[in-house]
Amino acid sequence: MVMKIIKGYKFRMYPNFKQIELINKTFGCTRLIYNTMLDKKLKNNKLTCYDLIKEIPSMYKEYEFLKEVDSISLRCAVFDLDNGFKKYYRKEADKPKFKKKGKKSSYRTNYIKSEYKGHVYENIKIDLEKREITLPK
Image (cartoon, rainbow, N blue to C red; front, side, top):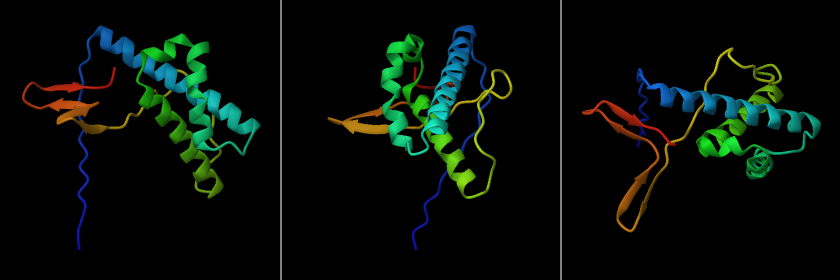
């Protein structure tokens, strides 16, 4: 029997002012994507998660500031919305609600690692010796 071990880490961060500004922009952009896609999903219940993700590039034209933040976190907001609807349909939770500014701000991103021509590319880097975490954007 093969067991897969999944590790989780918690870090306390001390961002500088420029990083705090980018984190707050990411909070706002993921909230905008979540609320916009929730509105579209409520109007047309047949839209799937992937249909909604396909609409994000068209939003870049309308909202230029979306290009400043991590695109993976924007997609994760749509996946979180989809998970909310799945829980609602299974009667495990209430219907997803619109997110408000300042209540509980958070966003999620995914770790992506790939190898191309012998070079390893990662979007999140953790250096425990230097005590640094590098996040996308």
